[in-house]
Length: 344
Image 1 (cartoon, rainbow, N blue to C red):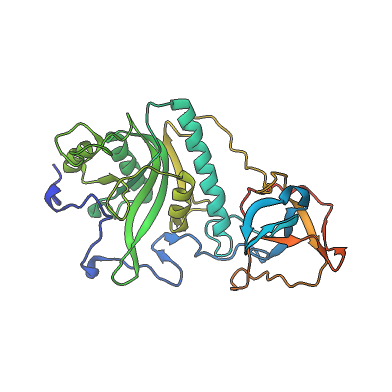
Image 2: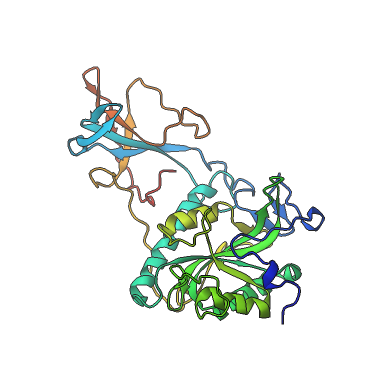
């Protein structure tokens, strides 16, 4: 029986925080590190080319871009779609490139979860966002042991598969500082689905649903495992696994004591051993006519900002094909752009 905390003083609706700052191990804000844990985007720049301007990609099919949409009171009429792209190493530790890693990883997560849903059908319901917090007295355990025990706690509550995104830190909202508090954000499936969402006795400890089950298991192992809730305290359905994964990856943690740290790991019915699917990144296509984007050149006189930190930077735009009677946009013959579809 777990006797350090009791059900009466545990809030299952919010991430647990500790009011006593003396017991919080704060993160070095300059490097985002605490022991061997580091926030993504706080490592060294991987390559001198990271984040530098690579060129412009777009679509010159102006005849297919006459859209019935309003932009500054006028229709987009036969304009070129274009956006700048930048070199990226796609490493989670790189401060210049971790955002491109984040986008690609989130899309891969969404793909694998969608493929799992196709295989499982209606047996598991929708993808759920689950938070699994490590009990404080187990913070001293090694990472491998902490993950193994957390996974055991998840499985014991009926979480049968998904991905685990490691977070070593939480933010102290009163001070704005991050402190060591290891937990995992899980995007996955609950056996039989999460049936407590529409139940009037949602937090009844005697029920046989997930909420009652996780409270009974808490008394034995001390793990707070819950379905994530919004600001109104409602455990809503995930509208977009991609958006949820992208946000959780934006402040996830990596291990500095590993040569190839894994922020995301898969388990159960979604594991690589159980589910054999291959993720193929989508080709970047024009959002208006669907054609594959190509490398293009601008030969006009307008200035386009390529500093992504500048307030003048524009990630994508629609431009006139002609200026002063001459075409100023043209395609550059080059290797096909095999991007993941993200304009970063």
